[in-house]
Every structure is written in C-alpha cells, then in structure tokens.
Length: 423
Image (cartoon, rainbow, N blue to C red; front, top):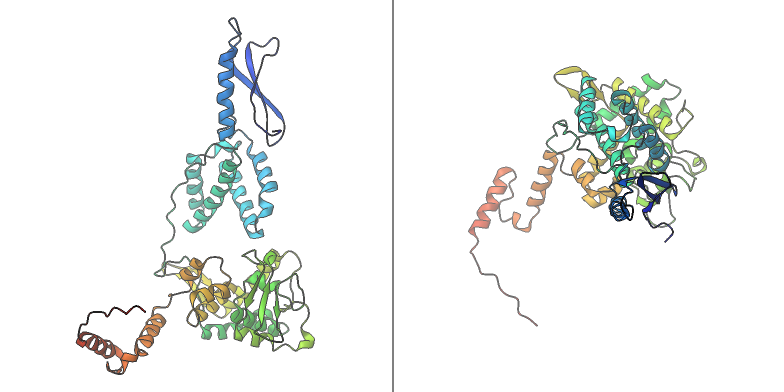
C-alpha cells in the first residue's frame, strides 16, 4: 500500500551510525533519525540497526511517537484551529479561543509537551487567585482536556496529562448546576412592565412581544433571532391545512445540529396567529436597534437588553447570601426555564424532551422533571385519590385519605393469586 508505514535502515557514506528513514503517512514527508548503532564489524552491525528500526516502526504504528510533544505550541494551536475548530459550534470555538489565551497568558508554554500535571495545577491556582469560580475553572480545564485529547488522537502526544480535581459548586437538591431559575408569572409581568424603562416608548411594543414570544415558545436566544416566517433555510413555523402547526428546525442554526419537525405548543401557536397572514414575512421578531453582525454578536446584544429588563424589574434568579453584591437577574434563558417547568407538569418527559429540543433525555430529567416538590406531591395525591378504591377507602383528603387507603388495603383478605387457565 502507498500509505503503509515502513522504517528503512540507511548507511550514508561518511556516517558513523546507521540512519533510520521513513515516510510520514500524514504529511507525506520523508523523515529520518539516527539509530544510535555504530557501523562496525563484518556486516557493519546492520542486524542490530534492523532491530532498532523494527522497534521504531512498532512505536510509530502504535502511536508512541519518539518525537511526541516536541511540536511547538503555536504550531499546534494553528493546526487545531484549522483542522478541528471549524467543525464545532461558534460558541464552542469562542470558548476555545479563551482557553488558548489563558494558556498563553498564564503558562507561557513553548512546546506541546510542556503542558503537564504541574502546569495544570498552577493554571487552576492562578485562575482561582483571579477570582474565577470553581465552575468556571472546571469549564476551562474541561475544554483544555478536550484539546489535549485531540492531540493524543492525532498522535502528537503519547498520553493526556492527569487534570487536577476541581471542587465544583455544591449542587441543589434537584442535582443541577443551573445559573438561574424559572421565573414565575408574576415576575414575568413585572418584566413586561419594566421594559419601557429600558428600551423606551418607541421600542416597548416590539420588546414586550419578544419577551412574550420567548415565554410561550421556549426558544433559545440564538434560535429566536434566526426564526423567520418565510425562509426555508431557517427555523420557521408551518401551519398545514390539516393537522397541528409545527416548527421546522434547521440543524445549522439549532443546538442539536439536526433538521427536525417539532410540535408547536398551543400557546405559541396562538401567539403567532396574532400576526395577520399578510404580515407574515421576514423575521418573526423585529427588534428596534438590532445590531448588525454575526448571530453571536446579535445574541449577546439582545441578551444584555433582556438582562437589563430583568434587573429593572428586580427579578433575582440567583444570589449569594454571604455576598449581597453578587446577584444575577433574570435573563432570556430563565424565560426558557419557565417554559420547561410549566410544561413539565403537563406532559411526560419524552414529550418535554422534544419541546425543549434536548439531545438527551437525561438533560430533561435533571433540570425540569421533578424539580418542584409541592407540585409533584399534589400530582401524587391527586393520582392516589382517583383510584377506583378511593371511594371505599374514605376519600376525605389529607392524611386521612392515605390512612383510610392503608386500612382498606390491610383489611382485604389475603388470597393466593389465581393461575389463568390456558386455552
């Protein structure tokens, strides 16, 4: 085969040691190195050089490169950004640039192999000294670990260093690491009322409509800004003559990166149908003062406006009792969280997964199913009281219902289960 790896023993005139030579299967360049075997004896000690060549070939084929890690850090970064980053989402690419910047600023590495356990521990300590949270440090190191794992897969390093253990922020009772929470209807009404103080009277109608759209759709911020009435290459609503309306999701502009048809909730369908048919063209949400540029730039701009509205409405979604100045106010994603939590009590988890467009149902279960203990308890008690036996067990509500049910259950005579007769 043309790309088969083969290490040859060469003996150039005037050289004291045998040379090893092979063709790089990636770049196609011919590479060579000294075998370290002196050319002495009857046969010039060639047999020993052949054994060294065989060992080197096994190392090259197994990924244990003799030159692993010697690549300059800048050269590796350039290759990674050219070969791998373009295949990732824009937000992931931006985060990778931040991590590369941290390595350059804090560690000052010259070669790929310079990043070891000692330097990783130093990087975590430096970020902690700068005031970064444990969750942020964990996120940065996870990105760096993915970068080094790619280097290992490309056989640029023999192994990935062991990363330091980061004590992440304590989880809540539901087991999540949310940076916010689902806001209530009363808080949402306050945001609608506060919008005029942030965007002014000329833009309040468009912005309150936008807030309502996020509230009843569950769209991510970036999705909402690429949501059109009449563009087939963007996410758009479909109202068929027969059947329920649905969303046509284009993978290029959706976090799941998959083209899909998704059900539309009745409240969002009613919201969209408020717009006359004659006006259903262009973007669904037209925001006054929308900045031009990439989707990332527009999303950050719109997100800041919504956060200002949340702050004006005094809707706090996260705060630290020990640090009164550290307060997070409602953002666009908290509107999405509210959508998910409302529908979590109306539909089953697999349906909610589709409404939220989660790739994994584990995400749905972790963040939205079973989060509210009171509502879960109400659902359990209501289901218990709807049983056929409830009437005979004393449907009086409260703990008496459960006590009565237990009494009825305990009072039933024990019977051996009957074995159904076979036909």
